[in-house]
Amino acid sequence: MTDKRDLLILGGGLVGMTLALAAARRGLSSHVVDLADPAELTQAGFDGRASAISTASWNLFSNIGLGPRLAPHGCPIDAIAVTDGMKPGRIDFRPEPDEASLGRMFANRELRLALFEAAKDEPLIAWHAPARVMERERGEFGVSALLADGRRLAAALMCAAEGRRSPTRDEAGLPLAHWDYRHRAMIAGLSHEKPHDNVAWEIFYPAGPFALLPMLDGPDGSHRSALVWTVAEKDAAGVLALSDRAFVAEVEQRMHGIFGAIALDSPRQSYPLGFQHTAKITAQRLALVGDAAHGMHPIAGQGLNLGLRDVGALVEVLADGARIGLDPGDAQLLARYERWRNLDNFSVSFATDSLTRLFGIPGRLPSAIRRFGMAGVQRIGPLKRWFMDEARGISGQVPELLKNHAG
Image (cartoon, rainbow, N blue to C red):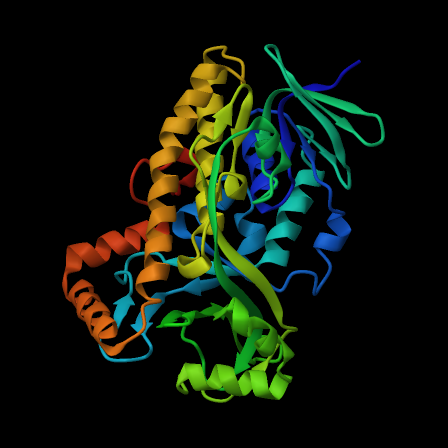
């Protein structure tokens, strides 16, 4: 007998598995298919990246039951300092004393571990990994995927959560706007002499942004931060070829001593940076979520958070539909999801792309103009508040799962 479920989620990464768990909390069943082996994805050292989880995204994790498991592993972001090359005129984003932090920093490995542990114990999730999809079908009455081992999985709605190179999106013929920034992100963990005081730094240089993101102190009490340093593609090979000592010297030069002496705390990794935006995120019995729908520069740390807002909106739309007896693949529901997400996805993508280009203009005059504008934001309370609410993901129409329901 065919195990037909509500959702067929192709891609079991951070966004795909969060979608499966959030859907399960609303009574929706799913097949989750991923090409990667979960044991490899959660190995120490597999992925040295860390993610800034916004206030709204933290609410989502809490509302689907992951709060207690994740809380000990997250470092609060109590403030964000934005500066043009460490020159005068910076912006300090800091919430009021009675407000929650601006977000939390997590190692991606900890997020995966929490999601995968929860998925294993959830009867509404059938997890197939590692598994290769050989064929996808979407029809008037349902969807299916044929796996390499001969199994065929059936559902009412197909959800593409495979990331930027989504084969499901491409097979569906959904148009994609994309370009290469010709930049590469250098990722590394740092230990440093002075505490970071839970402050995230975004230092803009003409060659690209240089971000220092607060992490929890190490077991030995060492102060730690995650580095995301953007370099031009033409310089990337040279930076990667530097010895650890020379790399640390380059990083220290750009930090201006704010954390004192530093040392590498993890192996270095690098990733190419590009932009992509899918104008249409649905088709017949198909919904795109996460990077399959939008990929952006990590300049403001919004990529994963935008994907989690997709999750919250899609689950709310499907749960509302289920209450009145609508099939998860109903065209009305998909149209509502598309309307809800399009403006937010486009706005955030456009904003991050514009910031990347604006701060990449070299010269003293552009720098002076930028710093004048930043000083204005620092002084104008309502404008500063708007930027903070955007960063926390609590502006606009927020899905119920991303709201704080405590108390």
